[in-house]
Length: 406
Ligand SMILES: *Cc1c(COP(=O)(O)O)cnc(C)c1O
Image 1 (cartoon, protein in one colour):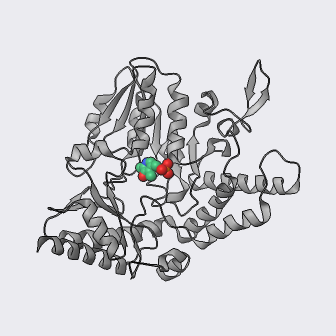
Image 2: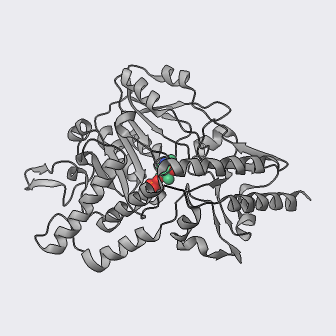
Image 3: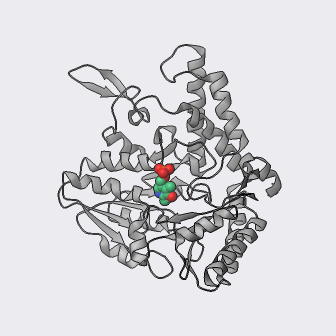
């Protein structure tokens, strides 16, 4: 199937609007991707034609809504090559997925237990583990990075002790673009008998992910970063872990029998889905996954690599440019600073030229601390970005830099 960028752009009405009188160049895809018409239409159709609460009703609408939600679960299962739909839990996002595991798995942890994370984690894969420290002494051990932004695997191996209970790491850095060797790192953890959670928020929209091949024990991601709706996330977990973990939240949908003396819990995956889920957004996941599959993740990856290469070499021509994250095979994320220009000022100037980038610490303050900076400007690519946009973005950065340095 040919990669037709014009046709792809037609699917995203928002890409045709202007900002400050200039055509929008949207390069904040690592924060959230835009949503194609087919996904928005799917949401409207759900509200107009099928809205009813799921799993409870005998009536037709409820059956339809339930079927659409379970169809989405099957889609997700295939998308990441899980073994069974029972291993696919719908959440509100990556953050909730990680909190679920930290809370439920964390229940079994004791004083002195250790969890390994990396220095490049998003706050949502740091803070949930720290919350466990409220009522026990849990030690976070941190894998460092080298000058390119690659994890130091020797140091990783050395972090394992008899007290290591869990490893939680990101598949792809939202700041550096580094693609971590998660399959190898999972294998190392498993040799020590330690389960692993992968934060896949920055991976699933940019490369094929196969949780079975990776042998990941948990894998969390968000729909809104993969052309899907806001407010829906997915937590994959291996059945043998999910079966043994206590529920995260209590409420409707997640129970077997309730009495004031004793409550039994529903089977997987419902045990972890308390309350009314966002069945509208979840159903729309089907359209988002179909959309990605229609273009092909290999095509998307190849396209984003071309944009990354062109943008990087253009930016490097700008005097005073420093790019953070130079790992070989990195993803389409560029964090940078220009000497003497605050990241916030650069972001403001780019916005005046219609270019949307992220500025700040990107929810990765420990990484910023390690890099010795407060924040960066970050441009991140998606399937719909074009070479022309790369030109406009890099020319805008050059112009902003010249304004400051004259
Ligand atoms: C965006 C992001 C998250 C958080 O995702 P939410 O959708 O806000 O829950 C976690 N980890 C990484 C690497 C991210 O990029």
